[in-house]
Image 1: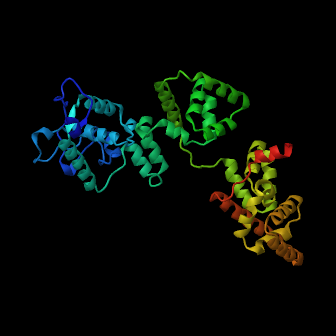
Image 2: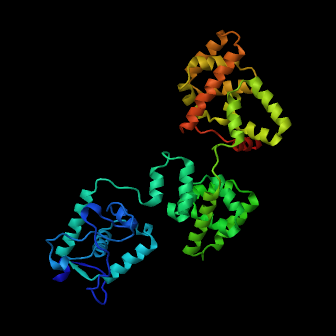
Image 3: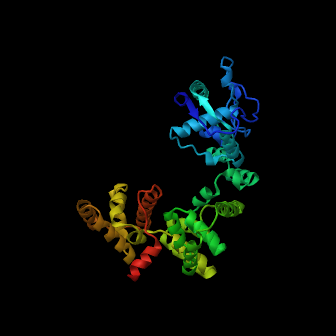
Length: 400
């Protein structure tokens, strides 16, 4: 029977009409156009034509299909096999072109199907190097290799749509930036933004919003049932355009964070002197700096007890002995006791014995040991092995 030797494609009034197709490129310079070629592994794409190259000279006349017809056959075959082809990533005109082409196709006999599939497989075998799809892929591949200024200029010149899905761009933003966007937009737009985020990022965004604003936005989510995909797309493009329009800044950290990191390494006397002067000049900035300073005294407040052994493992025991022997301020003593209580009892006993035998520690030596401990802790935080508790969590614990 015919059905046993054929691939069924959607029928049309005339199965002989396969549409108009551009002249096929030779095997060495194939151009498949659009994202379809890249997603199917058919090489790079630049021209926008939905083509596979025409068959070689020895094929039967019945198999003299155009490139677009062959592309439609390959796509239908892959879909029949259950392959997940992200056709939605194609430009709209290519999605329309592919769908229309499939609508014009009729029945494809088994021999033709095998030849088209064989040509496609052979073409994949001949691919030696592929390039990223469009400017979005190129920018991703060159990330860290070209300057941020150049990358930003390319994105602006190409437009938001050219560097990928705007919602992917927005989901990558930190929650505080998303909260800032939401607060500046209407409640309805902010509700769409909240709905398009994954649950974890959405919850984090709400944390950074004032209570009344967060309540209005969460209520507005109930009004988004009738929002159309086109509206969501336009909102995403508008929000992503605002992000790209922001001026490039030279520093990743805020001024308070940068100054706090510097004063963390400074001697205690100089740190107190600078903070006193900052209080007189700009009390708000001084407050930001204090939030970013991390000292030995804060370890007991910001570190989880289960993380103390991780810190002890990367430190020389002598540094712990020196810091604990030097600690005299109440908060420093509290940190020393916190660390001793949460490390192995054997190590804690050894340290206590050495501290009792240790004489007076010079300020420069003691502060140096404390700085060594703080720096080791920061390295563990940066590597993800240790997570510090936030200042807000400390305040909540104090209230409880």
